[in-house]
Image 1 (tube, rainbow, N blue to C red):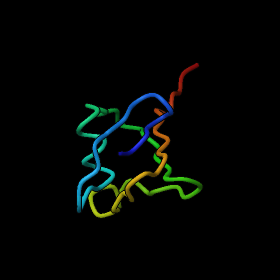
Image 2 (cartoon, rainbow, N blue to C red):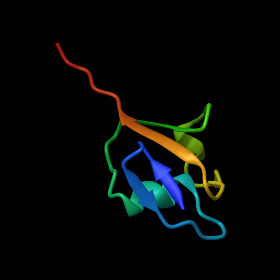
Image 3 (spheres, rainbow, N blue to C red):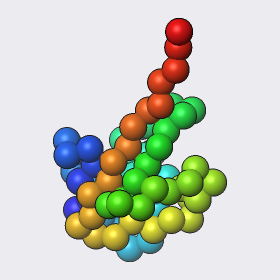
Image 4 (spheres, rainbow, N blue to C red):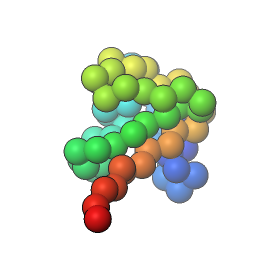
Length: 66
């Protein structure tokens, strides 16, 4: 099981990627930042970064405005 933002549990499976977790949670914002534990994952690596079972992920939307 993966814990996201200390709110959501996502079932873990072999080969689970950051992008899979984002898709499962329907997170489609254009400016998303993801970290697995203390490691920040670059957006270009979401599709190929594997998520370890039992990890804590943080996903947040960067907001801007004025």
